[in-house]
Length: 185
Length: 185
DNA sequence: TCGGTCATGTAATGGGTTACATGATTGA
DNA sequence: TCAATCATGTAACCCATTACATGACCGA
Image (cartoon, rainbow over all chains, first blue to last red; front, side, top):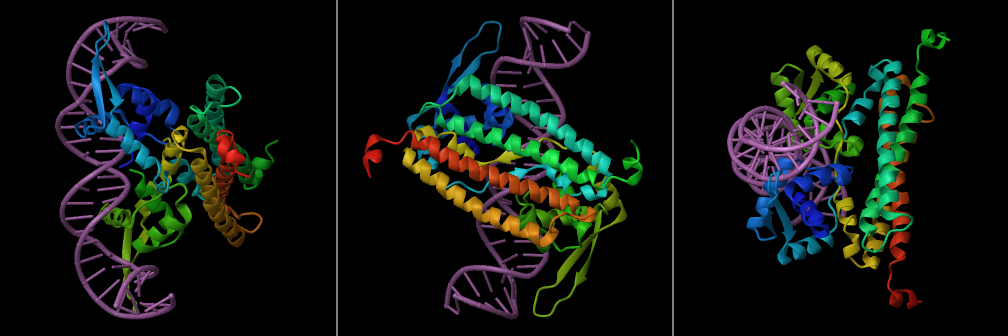
């Protein structure tokens, strides 16, 4: 029941096609919400039959036509009412942590390279996020920008926490390396 | 395709009933994985027909009987093989952040009390997690404990990052309070 | 020529949630 | 007496993922 509000929320900022929405989910919202394009198309037609959004077709040359969606007044009202309800508890599915919880079963060296790789991957993402923040908000956000500024700020903190954790976890695993490995240099 | 490994993983540590598994998900694994009891019962019977787990009935007086599940050898092998595959990207559904991304639409005072409440809630959870860590691992984990130690450590870092973010977010929103509110004392 | 981007979607399947059902015990 | 805990599950529904389909353009 909440994907609809994610869609309405993005449309409240800018009119978009289903394709655009999918891109936005992947690029800007992915660290706290995700949605597949097939889901988005289905949700958009449902929202349209309920009268919460409407679309107009934009014809393009040398490109497929687009359906640009916008909020209707009932859509804006529904979004606004939902905003004041208290949020449901977050749901996380993190396979990496599921595996880490069983790391007593694998060789410490394998665990250590797992953490190094994960740290590097998250450093790359952190770099993108920091660049995006500079580019979009500069030093301080305006009133209109504050929501997106705060969620991006959380994303950056999350990435930093993950990276720090990876570094410490590698050190913890190093304590369990075999003597042969310690003698290795 | 991954709930099965969550179940196998928990069973690899201790034989449990479906009910016990549900409790464990809620209490210890909830910050990186969640599963409803109806799902767990379905998955357990699927795993049993595939021969990855088996159960025995434990009769109790003044309580309903239990089915205690344990891994079979093929189950242990399947779990071990999965452990060495690289993890799929995490999936998050965080309604709170979805709402925060639209906080330019609500009165700053409302946003500020949202962040204060969220900070307090997460401080309580952090307290539980820190107590659990002391109780179970003391200063340093043993080789057998290291997986659970590391995931709990991540949970604690996540809670701290959330709490710090709430505090800063409240300050950011304070800048947008109306003059009337500032004159208020 | 092969894969990627743009743009839409349908159909089938798989995973997750809600409602319901049972029944004894224990504490408010 | 009412709600909660212990313990199991089924059925119906809703949400999410994967596979498939179309078709033109662009760069390697």
